[in-house]
Length: 426
Length: 77
Image (cartoon, rainbow over all chains, first blue to last red; front, side):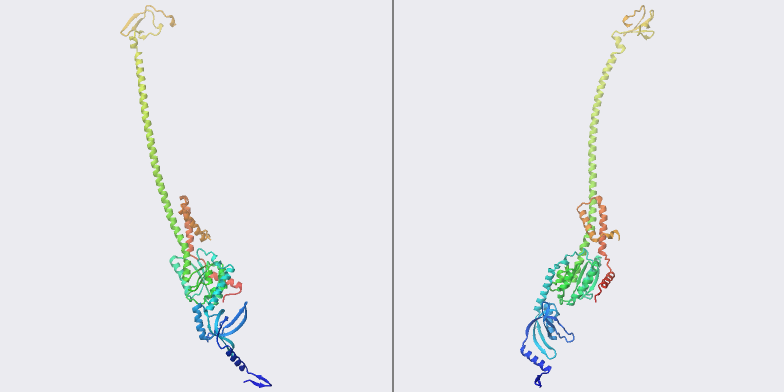
């Protein structure tokens, strides 16, 4: 009860606060729906109660602020509902549509007691954020930037952003291990540990990307690997700062985040995205096959082709030899025929020549026979001899010499009586 | 660095493909064949070596990171 003192009505603090409490309870008797941004969830681990900071902003400035209360049981129910619908837990920095009643506590003051939160409103808001990230990347002209980078023919040196103990990391590296064992492919892997989900992941992912960027010349590709973590808390991959970092990264960034929800912006802009770490590793191993198989084939093709080429030349050579042989044989036959014909003609000509000569000889013989002394004597000529020598000159014979006259039928001896030299012979 | 290592594996891969298509198209004479086969086997060697080896070393990279971190005045917690 208020006290009267010097005409003043004086209330105790409790009386005032209780009055406010009564007024508030009377004025705000029923619950109603409110939209606000939950700046901080402020969940206390021990009690499980939350005391969210709710704000409304205009042009980035806070224009209204009020504390809220979310009791443990309500939190558990709402959070489960959120994870089911949004694949995200209740967290800082989301816009919410909530059912609430205004309470006033003499000790803790005015606050909104949150009774329920509509996850579809936040879902729409998260989706809007995702679309905004996409739009901003497109506006800056960097949405497709990482995809435009050339992945080396052999993406051999891999900077892995993951958690060493995660199933995704094990799946990813196991594929390389077996590729090494089976095909003797060599990989260089280096792990850059980071959170992979939830709001803090944005910061640690960017920090590790910054580190890799400093030594980027040692790597062909960055792989962000997550797996076995469920589908909760992946909206960090829609965060603009992270997406921008990846889009503008100097070497290809590939992702195997391993979830079944819609593709995040990070996965959209990554150079290559696979639905699981295993599939992503297989993508890389396939690159090795694409390199290795043609090399193997090249070896086979060259050997095969060379053997065939040599065989072809051998066949050609054999054919040429055969052709040469047949050609030369023909020439021989032709020439032999020619020789034969010429020999024939020569023989013919020789025979004719012989016959002609023979005839000539016969004529000569006849002439010679006609001229023989015997035949001459027959025709009435005679030979005169003196002392056994035929007389050929006038001086050979002297008067008184005995000369012999040889006729065809016999010989006559006579004595030279006189001699008269004929004048024409002098 | 030896002459072999001076040829980048990507260049080796491309040149090898060229030789294969030349040989397949029958553009290489028997006289050139021996030279080309010798070259191809060198290139195949480079490619196979690349598939089976990496020369990176974690410690070197860590040292480079430390140097870079010192330079920028902060390290990752």
